[in-house]
Amino acid sequence: MADPPKGAARTAERRGYEVPVERGPRGALMERRRSGWRDRLHTTLDLIRANPTGRVALKIFIGALGAIVVTVGIALIPLPGPGWLLVIAGLGVWAVEFHWARRLLAFTRHNVQAWTRWVTSQSLGVRFLLGIVGLVFVSVVVWLSLKYSLGIDVVARLLHYLATH
Image 1 (cartoon, rainbow, N blue to C red):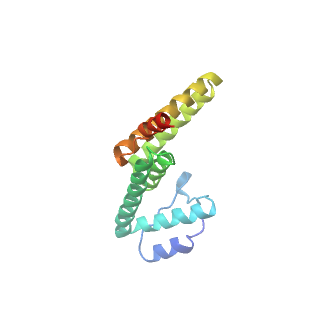
Image 2: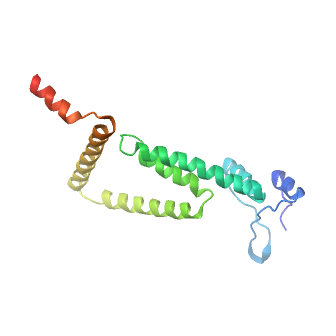
């Protein structure tokens, strides 16, 4: 049989909280093997989840933090920058506590990897064409965002500048 729990897990058991334990074949206790900071993070999350109040507070905190990151990411999508990266990072934050977010993150990861494999298997001409289409799309989104959000029509100003100089 494995050694008794150590550190925070032992303290939590003494206080009457249930500490999740992995069991192997024949019901034997198994040690979790993780790297240093991941082990501490998972132990902390397990201890928080062991307390009913902590479980609710953790869900609220993770939900709010993920919502903030996703909202900022969505606001940055039309602008050049890390919009989609922040949306996916917010989804990763939600995935810590919500099963639907884990499934959506796995689906997103699978499709991004499939798209990347497909693009890298194409000829240089196809990749160049995809790059041009992406650049045109981002340019149109930025132009429309500036025009309708801030009232700055970059194209009209450029045409006016070219006509007067």
